[in-house]
Image (cartoon, rainbow, N blue to C red):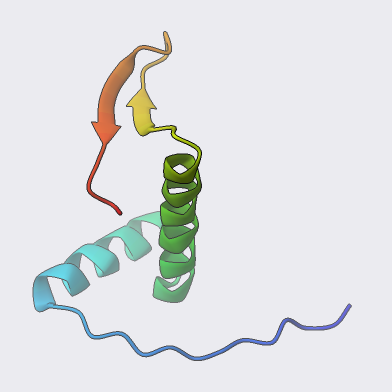
Length: 73
């Protein structure tokens, strides 16, 4: 199986954002790079939903909307 070609990306963040990234990465036992990849994947879901006239939200176990996520795009 061929390895995926990767492109290095440099990102500047505030100290506060770095602390959030570091905390989530540590608590989820993942790298900061993987965390960014997952964040972009989530934003892409929101982007595609918006393009289709849909919305993104958090639902509880009864599928009741708890919070709509706005302002990502």
